[in-house]
Length: 611
Ligand SMILES: *[C@@H]1O[C@H](CO)[C@@H](O)[C@H](O)[C@H]1NC(C)=O
Ligand SMILES: *[C@@H]1O[C@H](CO)[C@@H](O)[C@H](O)[C@H]1NC(C)=O
Ligand SMILES: *[C@@H]1O[C@H](CO)[C@@H](O)[C@H](O)[C@H]1NC(C)=O
Ligand SMILES: *[C@@H]1O[C@H](CO)[C@@H](O)[C@H](O)[C@H]1NC(C)=O
Ligand SMILES: *[C@@H]1O[C@H](CO)[C@@H](O)[C@H](O)[C@H]1NC(C)=O
Ligand SMILES: *[C@@H]1O[C@H](CO)[C@@H](O)[C@H](O)[C@H]1NC(C)=O
Ligand SMILES: *[C@@H]1O[C@H](CO)[C@@H](O)[C@H](O)[C@H]1NC(C)=O
Ligand SMILES: *[C@@H]1O[C@H](CO)[C@@H](O)[C@H](O)[C@H]1NC(C)=O
Ligand SMILES: [Cu+2]
Image 1 (cartoon, rainbow, N blue to C red):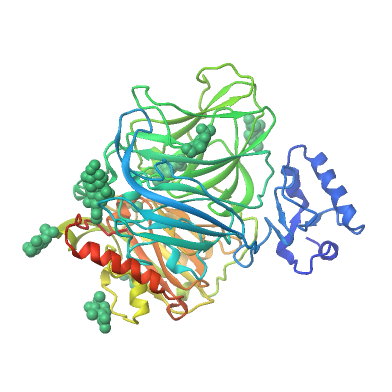
Image 2: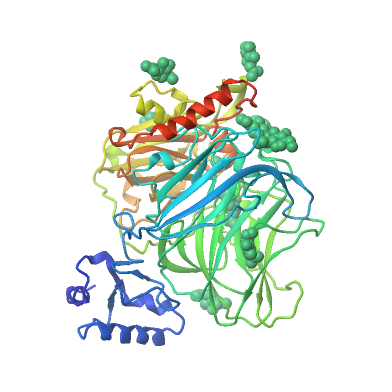
């Protein structure tokens, strides 16, 4: 970007505009019609000012979000805004009620099983708002036999740690019959999901999509909405958890899933059930918001005959990249664009378990994409070859907004977190089981004494199994080397999708074997590394992350394989303790209600980490 262009852009009239708000014109080449599209924008800009630069644009009130201008949002905000430092204030609150009940469901025709659902739907209703809105969700626990809490995955919860929904850390669980209203601001935009954080409970159906409307790094005509892909079991998640615990003691992998569901439906191996069907019109561009809500399985997705153009990874818009297959780790999201540029017909959308991620299953997920005017009937299209890239994040993911991580203090400040399996005395439920530990301890929280209770009462005697890592200083950078110990000799080298609450982490590097800071630090990426909220720790390998300490709170970081966090694979960062917004009396009431329920001693015992 030349200085003269910056000046021209600023003249376009945004007093608050900064370098970050300037959108390179080449962005528009991604729109349908290329140059034609560009010309339209030129025209629009010249009506604003005659000094319009031909190579840069400022998102202003004249540039509204539309099919050909998806990078625009509202006055002063665009895809080029650094959403970690500013966001619109809309004054709008979106209110929802989610009622968790114990019911039955039959998503693939295999027969009814017990399911725990929000509002009797699988997946639960989509929570949506615009960038800058306030979201307010009243959660009612109408299940008779479990507590619950809801985590809003990927939502930064800036200065609102009490709304993060992690029972045992940021709140007590909601007792049966209790309710809580979660309120938070949508400072980011894009696609995500919410799910229960009460043991393995989300695997029984307590999940739903989140869509925050905002700008995009590429144009599209139609938003097809959230597209969840999930493994599915005919036994309940609590049964599967118990089975996978026993298998882990024998160093065996958990049993395969029975099916993969796309948008909550699928066919079972006997052919019962039905596939989700999407209709496309030739030459239009479609936005698909892919969300992996699995408990154990990494899934690759593909649409026969079509490319998937990735435009966002988790909540972070990226420079568009084109793929035939996209690998989604659990909890990961990709926004992809599909161009309906093939012959009118029916095409298979495939969601297949990634064998190279140590995932296995008995069935494949499918959906159908059908062009308007196509004959009826199942597609007969063939799949692209399965890629051999291995179990890694999609790449290259280059964030649209360029941020740099300081490197000078990396060597002196980076600390290691070792991931391994070990035999640990889990005192709850009197079981001695093999668990996943971080630095040899498996996280195990007490639902009655969440971390924020310790902070409120200024009690620093945190139990060692809280795996609490203190980061006392705000406004600095913190660096972590997450290492599966033993490198390739790890007893069970499995890739783990690692998720951090309260932040997007910057991924400085990842690889196999053992990371050696003194020789390998120089190969890490500090200049606009990609950032997101879930990344793969390669099996028997390492990942190095960094994040700025700009959000006081107790933030969980854990493996998103439900069985692994149940088995202890988590730590909590206690960030800037002195600045945390403390819980109020409503928050305390949830704890009193929980204590009344739990102390009766009639509930099922806690049999895992609680997370
Ligand atoms: C769901 O209902 C079944 C009985 O139908 C019961 O055994 C189970 O404990 C209930 N689960 C929850 C979470 O309420
Ligand atoms: C939750 O409910 C399931 C049955 O749906 C049961 O197996 C599990 O033990 C319960 N856990 C707790 C801690 O209540
Ligand atoms: C996807 O699932 C949602 C929620 O069940 C439903 O409203 C929507 O119609 C589904 N989409 C398609 C294309 O079937
Ligand atoms: C979902 O995540 C799991 C675990 O990381 C992974 O095995 C699976 O391939 C992912 N699904 C998709 C659609 O990518
Ligand atoms: C997919 O993308 C590649 C690389 O950009 C391109 O060569 C190919 O023609 C595209 N295929 C389709 C079906 O659009
Ligand atoms: C975890 O253990 C490693 C190896 O012993 C040690 O270097 C590191 O400091 C520990 N991490 C923390 C956060 O205590
Ligand atoms: C755990 O063991 C103790 C001592 O052996 C016993 O009193 C208690 O009832 C056991 N609790 C459970 C949940 O089995
Ligand atoms: C602090 O927490 C510890 C561990 O839960 C507990 O044993 C102790 O009584 C608490 N101290 C105070 C003063 O409440
Ligand atoms: Cu894991």
